[in-house]
Length: 280
Image 1 (cartoon, rainbow, N blue to C red):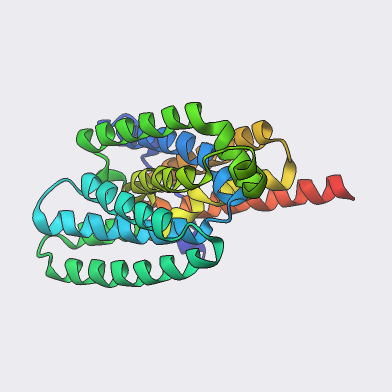
Image 2: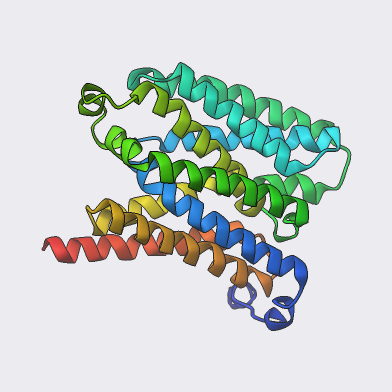
């Protein structure tokens, strides 16, 4: 047991690894992803779209698997798969009572197709495993440019549409009555989720996208009711989890997803404790 723990928290060679270009690219990717995920997470929680994020991540996995089979950039495949899923969720599941069933149908199809595509792929097994759990070496220069472009689109859209999105997320009925284009914002926000989910898949894998897309927002909601403060807290939690998880995974040479999930969960527990102390 001690040997397992020692391996999990090993820092052997971490300092040297931090000087390597591929590690530095991974840290840049983690920082960008932390910013974008932190900005979206409170809105995702407010809109009750955790299941949509899960469904979108599965379709990002399918797009990445298709890219492996076709021999194209995995990041581009993940983006295409997740955006397609987001559009389907946004257009077909506009009503709350329809959303879960639509997501479930598309998720099951996409996951089955993704598994079939991975079975058809004859390349390295590490590429298959990386789609599910994330891999630090998966972030190359091309992925970094794709990430930067997608992050720019997401942040730019939030700058323009943040107030209507927040209004539609907290009280869609009143927002529609006030003239907010709720039906337009639903697929728009779904696409933003799709893009961010696609960015997260190479880093943390399709299995644990929820860790960075949901938990920071849920943690922030425990300590602040202010949209601005909640967003800042969510960004900080996402950054700490992603950057910390990346650094902690270097010494053991293990997938970063487990470290990211553990850190963000600890942050959530701390925020719950703070919220309970405040309420009591």
